[in-house]
Amino acid sequence: MTEFRIFTREQRRRYDEDGFVFVPGMLTADQIAHYKARARAIALGDRPQAARRRIVKDVRFAKGLAPAPEDPEHALWKIMNPDRFDPVFRDFLQTPRLLDVMQDLVGPDVLAFLLMYIYRPPRLPDASHPFHQDAFYFPFGPHDLCAALWIPLDDVDAETGSLTVMPGSHKLGVQPHAAPEGVANGGCVEIPGADAVAGAVTLDVKAGDAVAFHCRTWHKAGGNATDRHRRVITVHCASAACRMTSDVHLDEFGMTLVRGRLHDGGLQPLKDPPMDIATRSHEADLAARLDARPGT
Image: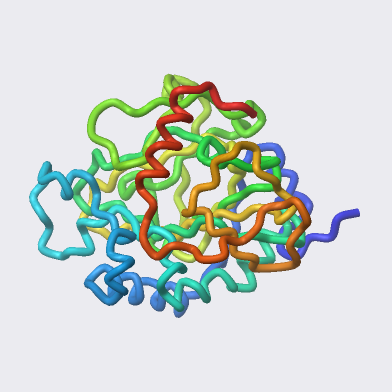
């Protein structure tokens, strides 16, 4: 019988049935303040020059489609894999409660492979990310051993751009994805017709609580129609027993062992994770995936 470190058996049952589950109390108020302050310092320039492209503006500001905000941090879309260059976010990956949750989801040997600090700029309600599955981006599996934690640092609701999920959608396999119409941030894809499917739930989540979800769960996030900040840390983890399912291995998936051990033939950490973003390889891989029907 499996023994869980954080989850109750009911929580694990809900995750298996719905593809997501609430996890209260992931971060304390002091931890939230710490990560907010560090991200702001990074946004204002306190980072290595080689990591400058990891601080990504929303496309509407980057292309001059919206007037630049007075506060530079309000123009940002995300900080991509800040653990590559910043010790504060590198230490975040060792948060005990985070590791306990991930062990409950993917097993005792845990790789953290993608960390993002994601903004929804104030007063930019059209800055949304449509329904998609994270598994579409991941050339490894099995997908049942890959999960994410979505941790808001501000109270979030529909007005500020909270998470909307489709319960049970993780059971459907990876769906075809397409590039969305209109203005979209780089790398955004969508499941065509997903908005017409009934049953989606938009979640209200308090700062410091979290949502854990399966990498095949359909999810989206709306834009922020308010004057409030909306900042979220998202971390994706996989079992070290997972294996590559294609010959593509993007450098953005660093595969940091955060608990347990590595497996022969399983995913392995990058020897020298690049400080810069390998945008060309990412764009080429995404284009190839959009040209082919994804597997399951």
